[in-house]
Image 1 (tube, rainbow over the protein chains, first blue to last red):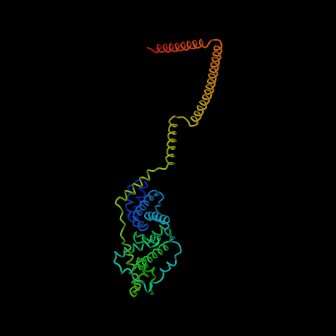
Image 2 (tube, rainbow over the protein chains, first blue to last red):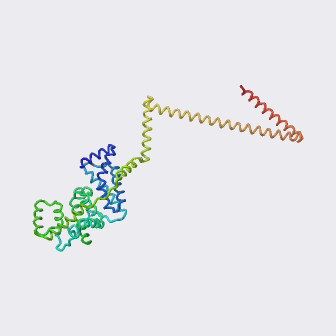
Length: 189
Length: 191
């Protein structure tokens, strides 16, 4: 189902067709739960938040601007919910557009001469488990980008649209997140 | 070429390097085991991350969302109910006005005129009732005073025993009159 069909479903929903919105829920419940679940950690909470995303989306569907992708609009709602949750729990959040150049600069340097290998040590199944653990240790905003990129397979452009940041900034932060995961895996091996 | 920046390795893995730069990178990777290993490692991690299992969605998830939406729709705010009621009344009034053929000014003047007349009549009636009650009170008071004076004079002229007999006779007379009146009334009621 492509973006055009999403727009059709949105229009049908606005005309009062609840079945159309049900189709939207069925389409996006899995990717949204995959994202929210990794952001909040607890399954029941993740299920509640994912429901909240759809309820909020339905309530404010008239404010959706068709020039944007519907999926990115949903992820934006989800991201705002997650950030509110982090703030309430006083978990560290920081602006992705802020200056964290010391990390960013490390990506511009060449591969270090003595870089211990981690991936060859583990089989794929074990590597997946360790990545899940590493994700929990990642700062929230970087975890979000990592999950969007690898699990939800969003493009840098889509992520930039959701976060309202330049594509270059997002790309840099995603690479930063990947390097951080790699370093955590390195520490675990 | 010198060793690869990490940014370029990621771009290379994701296939985002421009063609010229990619060829350059591939040439370098063939001869540099360190960069080759770094690229392979990051590719392996990316592959594992991209194949992380999905979280299980409960079978009734969609139904739960749709029922929450239904419940939210059913809850109308109070101000909306008041607004809807006022609008409905206004609409009904407009329909009645149009159907009656009257104009709005005429109905408004007629209603205010009637209200004024009712208010005036109510004021006059209230004043009359107050006057009547006041006169009745004064009359009853005079009668009671006269009766008291008469009894005190009789008390001074007649002996107490005779007074008691007279009062007894008067009581019998009043009771007889009351019974006679009741009988008359009940006879009048019979078919």
